[in-house]
Image (cartoon, rainbow, N blue to C red; front, top):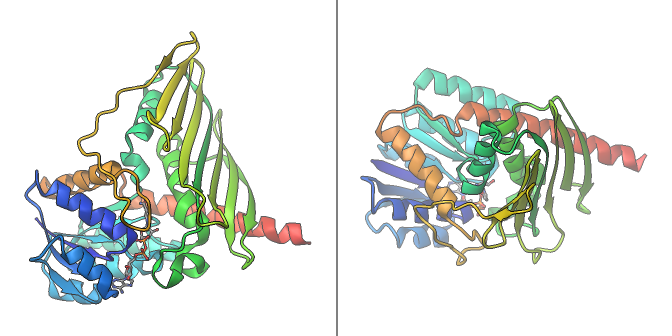
Amino acid sequence: MKIGIIGCGGMGRTHYLSLKALSRHKDIAVTALADVREAYLERAAEHFPDAHTYGCGMELLQQESLDAVHICLPSYLHTKHALAAMEKGIHVLIEKPVCLMREEGEALLKKEQETGVKVMVGQVLRSFREYEYLKQVYDDGQYGKLQSIVMQRISGDVLWGYEDWFHDEEKSGSVVMDLHVHDVDFLRYMLGEPDRFEVKATAFATGMINQILTSYEFGDVVAMVEGVWNVSSQTPFQASFRANFEKAVLWYNGSETPSLAVYKDDGTLEHPELESEYDASDLSGEMNISNLGPYYEEIKYFTECVAEDRPVRRAPLSEGVKSVDLALRELNAAKEYILNRKK
Ligand SMILES: NC(=O)c1ccc[n+]([C@@H]2O[C@H](COP(=O)([O-])OP(=O)(O)OC[C@H]3O[C@@H](n4cnc5c(N)ncnc54)[C@H](O)[C@@H]3O)[C@@H](O)[C@H]2O)c1
């Protein structure tokens, strides 16, 4: 299977290192790479000396015949490249958020239907072992009903982006579309659409939202989620959840080992054994992704869907678009909240 990667920055690196590891077990090859920044392109090409290299993603799509392409571009460039790839009949794995506007989502869904290509969105929590375990416990009811869940995604200020695109709301959609969308997507995956939500927020001095605190009601389940880009880039990254079931508390902290604990109502504590095919960290880049495993799992799933001509069920385009839709509604509510506080 011939695979191209467009965008070899922070996430592109995560994708190509995962693909390199996967190519030891699967019949896949990265045959084309694109990045406008030469240094990043060269750094990627060191891993794939036979790959064709391009200084522009659209040119790669015009020139290459590929089975699949991974779009790891700044979010405002996703739609244009995904539409062009689909036009050529290339299957697409696209980073989250799949797009930044509802109209883009509609155009992508229309093109997917017209072309019949497979599209998966990099909503990677759906491939995290700990989050999968949580969903499994929720689905099988082994600890009774879920009563509440509190999730956090805490990041330092994001300084590594190409031309500082993260700090331009038109290009990133702020922390809400970029970071918070992970938890939004997972909640939707597990619980469906919320009946209602309420948002509180803070903003950077520039006015762009940098912290969102949303409370939701999903039927009987209440949820609270925080997503923040702290003003200091030095703040350590931390993701966590605490899910209160009738008979146990599942407590995950991605910065701890073991990361997942189950505190049962009989007073016992268990750390579930969660198997992983691939565990490796990449601290050489700017992003501090401490474990490539979930990305490897996500990419492996997508390549299997393509190779075996199976439908993408784990994070299909339609789901990515619905998560963007909810996150957009939350972003609008966050902006309204800030405006009203100023009055
Ligand atoms: N799934 C996750 O956990 C996760 C984590 C971080 C970022 N992301 C997402 O991944 C995407 C990329 O984020 P990033 O952190 O890698 O950003 P980045 O700025 O580090 O990387 C983007 C790369 O695209 C290149 N680029 C820009 N325009 C181009 C063009 N026209 N053609 C070819 N290359 C071009 C840039 O030079 C840069 O190297 C974003 O959508 C982001 O939200 C996902």
